[in-house]
Length: 66
Picture 1: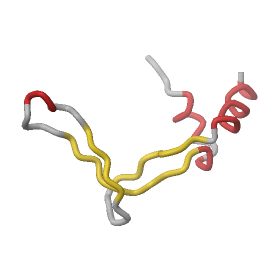
Picture 2 (picture 1 turned 90 degrees about the vertical axis):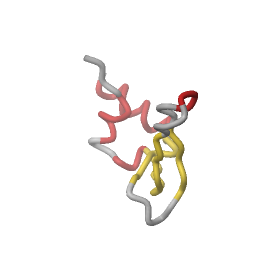
Picture 3 (picture 1 turned 180 degrees about the horizontal axis):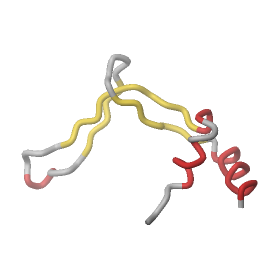
């Protein structure tokens, strides 16, 4: 099993990342684009994704645990 260290750190400190709300679209019809995702910022969107990481704070947190 593989774990994402940033996702695990976010459980303890959500301020490690900056988030934006928007829409994630997954392309399902055109064969050459199947599975491609597209992101569009939309304050009323139903998805929230991390768009930036405070890298120094993340590594401080990560190495304080290990």
